[in-house]
Image (spheres, rainbow, N blue to C red):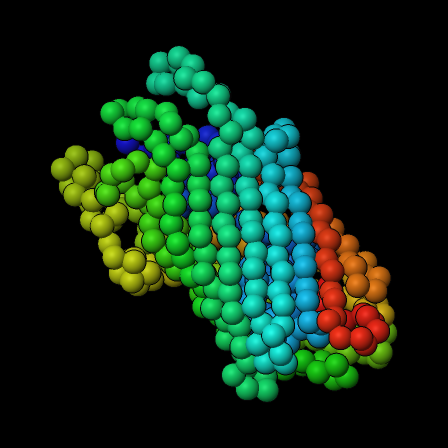
Length: 391
């Protein structure tokens, strides 16, 4: 149990990032794993309906999770979003879920403050030792709390900065191999840019860049060596909006993500060499780990893609579809998603559904994933609360 987190996370979370690859692609896998992988779960029903598209879409209260620099271009002064996601329901898990809350407050026409919370419950777990003896039960849980500030740099460009506190309690108080496990804690930051070229009457292009989860490693013992990387990520996105008339518009977009975590060393069969390689792997500096994530393998295979679209009618009814793609050697997660939204005055409802795919051992464990979202868009002045471009 020296690398306790990796073993426990594999059993508790069913290896969220790589599950389908493990089930259906047993050969030629070269998967990069991290601690706190719940930070890679899309926490928003709107984005979930578009294949997890979110870096350059039009601003909404959940923009804090994807690219908070979109917020200054929101048309309302205050936005609040709540989302509930039952997780891995297709595998018969009924007590694993993600709760997410996000919001922003515009300080003026050029700046805003943001905040968000993600809480991931892994249900009730019965712990055992290597011999199968019961050690008691526990309730593993993780959360991340964010605060941020974003500001326009010009008429169409904005920048955002976010600070994040991450807490992960997987097996606090249990002991094995001479170590007592404790909650993992660390801090991280996001830096984002957003170009807003869409106009209300003519549509146009949006572009986004987001560097997320740039922060310290996380460990579950007092050992300074046994710490794992968190899922630092580089996201690039673009979207285009067509305005057909005052009632009908269509937005399509694509995101590309690159995990800024080095690939673990391949075992050589020599115990001394492998031990040295593992120590060197975990002892990389943070800037060094981000830089080395671009070396040593085909970089195109390490990319993830989200493509999707959203059709809106009278800015009240929304229909969404999307596709997520990951290379077979990096986990092989592939799925279609669908979503709908309804907006009435200040309140909006969003639903997304991950379309089942595969069968038997090749069935995607994320099949039938549902997300339920509620949003509120408010003004602090006395204008009437007509519908806005946020969903």
